[in-house]
Length: 217
Length: 217
DNA sequence: CCAATTTAGTAAACCTTGTTTACTTACGCA
DNA sequence: TGCGTAAGTAAACAAGGTTTACTAAATTGG
View 1: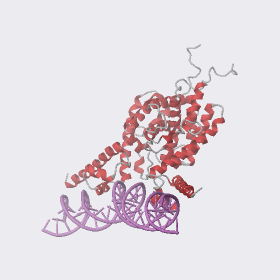
View 2: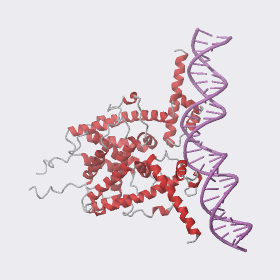
View 3: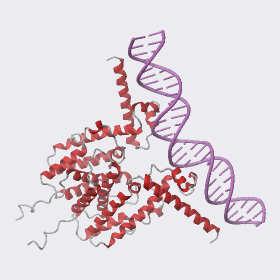
View 4: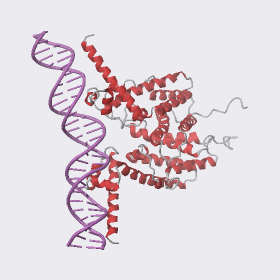
């Protein structure tokens, strides 16, 4: 543990400090309201110092998103214990909406901001793992539901199904975040819209109970 | 028609010139990429001149949005001839998606940008008119469908239904616009997603054919 | 231990962009 | 003709992302 190690440790500590301050400030005030100068002031370093750790503001944001995506994916994965894939999906939808409601600025950064394409291959490696990637989780639920014959015909492509389901919920949250104060729309309560959308998704996807039920006759 | 009238005419002509240049540039390059200086240069006036017609950049944008919303609403109203309210809704969904696909920057401005609350009452007056307000159009379709018993139980609130339906489609288009180049998601074709969403909406909302059909037995 | 080099950090400047101030010009009108 | 208002401009200001040029500290090779 020579001086080199300590320096590297200090370096990482400062990097983390920048990330933590950035996350906090962004969460509180949103992307545009937080300036590099603000972050620098917050951590008591000069603005230039941030650029020793991140190429630019976008790079910093992207790193925050990366971490948040990962944490979000592992959060989703905790629902893996629910046996019924459609119930699992329902729970995932509730969790997704709760996250967006609790951290609208993070949601905005993660799902409502166009990020220039990244080419670094290492950024891709954690994907497709349902343990860490929320999209893969949803896709897996729908794939399983389809294989068990629980879906209507026409939903055999798990990617298409996952994208439609994701988009449906995203729409509710995106409209809430951008238009929540719009006086033109007589908004129903957000919870009602989220529940309504989940209801729409489930009744739109789920196959009708085959003949009815064995009890009736 | 003295000189005063001519001056007023010139004034309005310049205002329109600014709006036209702004619309064109915004449509091509998006909100952030277009600067007041760009617009000024485009119309061959000094930047200051724009401020004689619009309070600030936001005011200019808002006026563009206002016009576009109105045009969009009247476009929707052309579908009023379709008798079946659910089919009418389906056609409106297709039209909505086509607009977003053709003018993604306008769509972004109109539906994906948070606009400070406006207090001018005259900006509200054209609302609730299904002839000019796309939201009111969708709401009316769903209200009619409900009254004709075409919807499942639980969709008696036309505002909630309209907001859920709108959000579902919006989600597809918003994700397309912000994440279309995201390498993390194996996107299905946009048309497939739009059609899938419309299918999901219709099968999620429409009441099942009552006992089956009189033909079967 | 000392000098050279690398590294971390800073102050000040640069550049772009929205916006305003202070001035000029042109025109209608008495 | 001269006055006042309206249209227009150049230049400046302010904010914010980013860079340049410099300083100081620490590591390292001899």
